[in-house]
Amino acid sequence: MNLSDFYTEAQQRFEWIRSHRRWLHAHPELSFNEYNTRDYIMSVLEKLGLQPRVVARTGVTATIGSGTRCVALRADIDALPIEEQTGLPFASTNKGVMHACGHDFHTAMLLGAAALLCEAADQLNGRVLLIFQPGEEKSPGGASLVIAEGILQEFRPEAIFGQHVYPEAPTGTVQIAAGPIMASADELYWTLRGKGTHAAQPHRGANPIRAAAELIIHLDGVVQQSRNPLHPALLTITAIQGGTATNIIPHVVQLKGTLRSFNDQWRRSMWNRIIAQSKVLCALYDVECNVDIVEGYPPLICDSGATSHVEEVAKRVIGSQNIYPFEPKLWAEDFAFYAQQIPAAFWMLGCRPPEREHMPGLHSPHFTPDEAALPLGSALLAAAAMAWLSS
Image 1 (cartoon, rainbow, N blue to C red):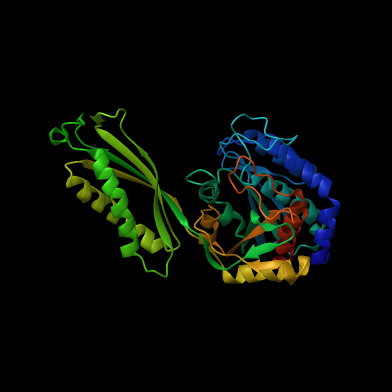
Image 2 (cartoon, rainbow, N blue to C red):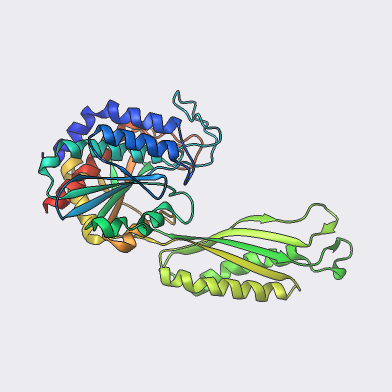
């Protein structure tokens, strides 16, 4: 089968792929609770003649082909705690849960790729490892759990490929880049304990709100002063909670935020700096400060060789005029854990209807990606795997 034939075959299977996407969309499940999703995926794979098995409790793996060489394909399967507002006839039937990040697309496209590869199994020069991964949206990330179970050591894939629907680009296009394309993402929590008092007698207390205000400004400066200006990074405070009345200075204020960077070494050096300087600054106001940093996903760094491979495959499938460079984002993606272990390539698949200039973005309750992107996503995954094993 020529690589371009995968796209033709996928288009002929459009209704089949779309039916799976719509079932998945109507039955979303939150991270690490994707039990029905897992069972559905296993049922589809069994009907294709495969022998799926459970990984990381709610994930699924299966292999196609035989031989010592192996390449892996990954899709994430979890949804988000969002109340859907699309009005689609196949909208979520699980209240407060929605596939607002396109993981229903990712899963359906990998099922489509599995069907294409099963048809071409006698042409595979090795095995394709399918990874339907749970928990991408929630720390510690399902990828870390899949790796911890020894899947990569067992099958020893030479490379791994993944993709993400991208509403900022039109359907029929692909954006891809080597090097760091997404950031690390750590969760930060501050608890500031002062001494509550009447607002008219501030000298009798220790105001944690005042300390919090100064701390927010100070931390922004810490990041700016400590990073190389050529290396993007940010610390964003996203929540501040404290106080209940207009005339009472509270005892406690809590802050939440995120630290993001493409540089893993710098990121780790910042943890101690944030903790130390937060404590010192708050102490100036006689406020005690406790900082809790929850380590998140590492930066996603795509291998140059694997990325070049996918670019060439994509050109053969849809033409070079539809391939564009991807501008790195300070988003986070737990596919980064795989990229730490083996050569990896991750690309963005356009899913905005061509007739529209804009559409609701990822994590929006109105997110409605163009289903016409489904066959291309399946074809690219299948072709990337086939071509890698043929190289």
